[in-house]
Length: 386
View 1 (cartoon, rainbow, N blue to C red):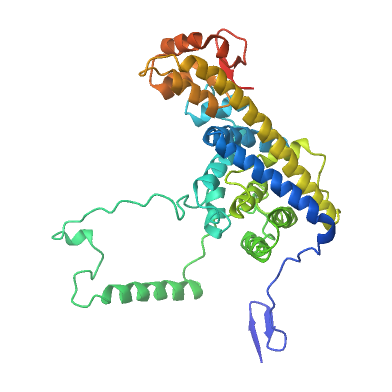
View 2: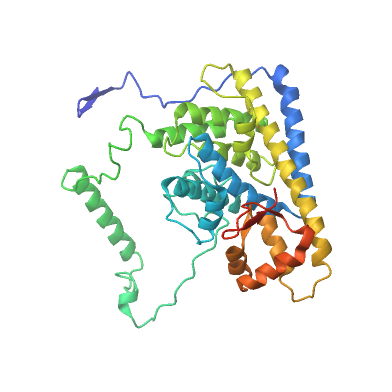
């Protein structure tokens, strides 16, 4: 018995088998020690970050610098100052295409950090990180219900006030079946929302998403670093979201966070930039795992150096802020320096809700504890912890 339709022939003797991504056969005796070493380094850094009470500021700075680095890895240059001002709604020029992509990468990292750990590793999470779905996950804010007037029939759905409470549900089901029948009969054309000039018609992104999520599920019992490495390699092999290649490293960091190694998103783009590993597609499974371990090792080193800078800068500024009045805005300016790669006078005036002259006076009050000036110009001045 066969079923024919649109030129396809499906026989009962040849059942369809779902596609599956082949997991590599890893030599655990060889890489087990390296995985344990890097996992301990990640957990030590995360514990030190939590104990320093600078985790929020460090993560905010890391998200902005990582959004710039992923664009650099993609061959596009974005100034971190432009991204900081664009994020604050204070653009000094019209946003470029590169700046818009960097802002999308920054938004994706913030969404991945702002939701529960397993949520980004789902269909809804992938859609939200890409910017095509709702960013509200399990831990997101719930919408407020509006109280309708009970005497206003227009505020309620049809059949809501009928004696039979199931009549409205059955009416909705009948309407859905009617629309489905028309679409199957060809009376209602399917919407074409994707242009073949931009997207490859031969690539099924939905199928690739399912394959990648299946890889994440099948490696759930693996060591966290090995699971993240295999998931990142599968992301590259499947070429998921060719227009957003920076999502792969974010998802690898989300796996490490979901597995409990860290409560933050590591700067894997910085680690990839500093490491010597460059995937070519012909490496063995052992080389890919070792390469990802190099990326994580460099990411932890970059994060540790930035944390050391923040700790030193906070100690210097606290010597001045500890002597100021209780109603002074100087501690808030210090927190702004600790959470942004750079700060300008208009930016400080907007966030602190003071005048630009007050920001100038506070900068002068910091004296030698003031962060380094980055521009060296009189018209556009910026300071940052570097």
